[in-house]
Image (cartoon, rainbow, N blue to C red; front, top):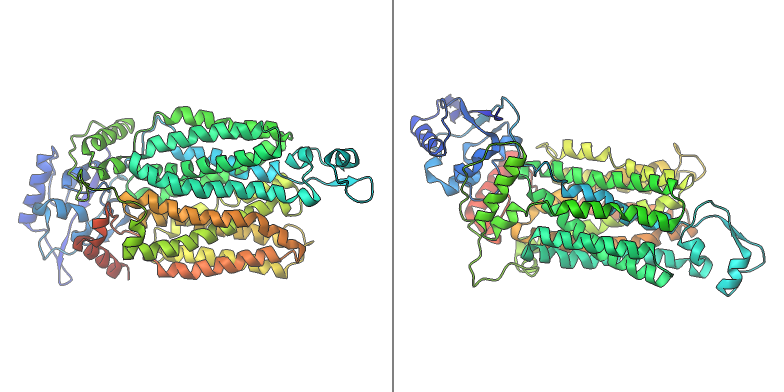
Length: 582
């Protein structure tokens, strides 16, 4: 049976309820009938969920936000893009309020069910990101002579490792003067992420999401096997650098691809689901490390799921939003039909209108420079770059520091991943509330993360799990994970479709500087055990306060092109939403 929703409309004038005008209803009914839908009455208009929004003259690929986000809103904002595309649907001036009540939840264009969605491969991304935590772990050891031998051959004769696992430290004796190489390999990985974010974002904006995503995943698997089979440290470090390039770029594109398969009202859900799989991946990697104590076998096993994800990714369709923004409306329609059929819906008779921001043949596609040329985007990008840097710095600093905490190594790593899981339901709840939204919620999470890290300096290091710094460190990790989750969603909504990947790429680039510096911060514990946490705490607090300078995006229209940011209609809708939310 088709999933239907009941739309009840009441017009109000000067605060008094009035019947919906007959002329407006006739105009609406005429459009619905021309699309093959027969509404029963003005106050009982049945339609098939989101599949009706293309028929209503929408000029962008976003379903009416009222379907999922509003319980009451102005008629002028009920289908904001529909009024632009179909003047006949413009409501009378006397109509000011529309009330929605659903008999069943509206259907969503949620990606083809038979295909493994790209967010699932975040488990694989997590294993690659966390590899150095276990592969570079330093076991307890003692040297049966005074001083450390100068040559590696002599060192191998006199050093004895006490733990029952191997790592690059035990194989290549990376201790004392060579100990920095473990942090160096980790920083090279994050340096690769930086380059991957710079290059893959603009490439996917120009060439498409799917081909760039699949290419990155393919080379990620190849270099992952090179890491596992590296005969010496130099090849291991270089392979980690290239893994970072393709892993970071592929993960960025897969996130955007996942978001663009669904309507904007579901971005918070898919964004949270994408990030929660990364958290689960950390716990899965800790379990693999507990079962596989040989580092080369661990690297091979944790890399193998990439082959599985690669084969399934060929079945994914291209992003309909990207196709639409490039003027390929016919191909976008085919993808929407494919998604609808995979979701068990009947074939739709839809026809998308050409996008207002579609490029002419003699025009160049928007590039990274547009982030600097446009004043609105320039200010947003500067703020977002710093916030991304801080989130990465604190997140990976606390994650990599899990191996430095007291207690069982594998349990600490698993907890650092599992502690993120409760953060995502919290995100889902708060970011959809009008009194909190994206901006205020992220500010609170970053502030709490910073305070949790700072307060560790007041706790004794030997107080155990419940009363020691480990508990506050895990709380800080949960808070910054929640902020990081919101940041992905928030940033996606602040950029237009034609620059969304480029904007995310630039922000992720600055994020990687935080990842590059994070591995070296735990070494500051030689000064004081609380110093690393204080550094993380102060930076987290600063980012939390700066977030307040960004605009709120909850229930706001999503720009498809740069022109949309400057169009009077977009500005009017944005200002009206701001007035209503305040």
